[in-house]
Length: 249
Image (cartoon, rainbow, N blue to C red):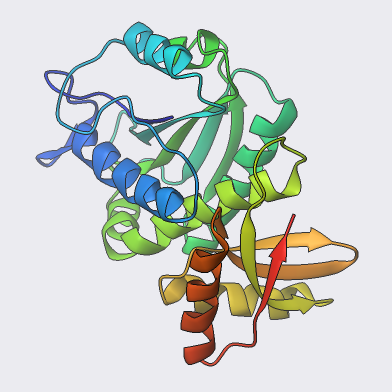
């Protein structure tokens, strides 16, 4: 379940007419679209500008029986341009949610954000009352001109980075469920070479992510339930000049 923080009468943080609730919704929907296109079942707390209490958001998540809850926010500080960067909030630093938080934080660092870190915030309702692993993402400070420029100019890369980090985390863990087909475009012993291909793919709009397995950095694209969809993605990549291999977990 994906959640756009705030909404309706709750504007969230505001800066020069910019409202956090709008940025949250825009980014959440973009990430959800990418995940859905790659075989992930996605549900939302809201898809329009409505108000929900944190308790309602947690209740919706629990009723949905989702495997993960990810809430999208933007940070703010007492003074404009006082701070910048991305951080991820968790109930505690344990389990797959911590691994996912690390991957998302690293992906945002690759986009250009300063990596503030991962913080335990057990008092937050959406982290405390949700039954499943839950993360709250603070994607830059809304009253930072630097972060706003990144958010606007690299919006597609941000969405691809978050979605790719989520897909990569799921791939690295033994999660019972259906087999997913992925298209591998390279396997490197040198991390820099893998990163170079990853940046190139995400820059072209591919939902690419990086895995480290068996001493190799593997660059893969997508996570498809249907083999035919993986074959279509493989053809797109081949038409774009990439050597490919379809793999499963």
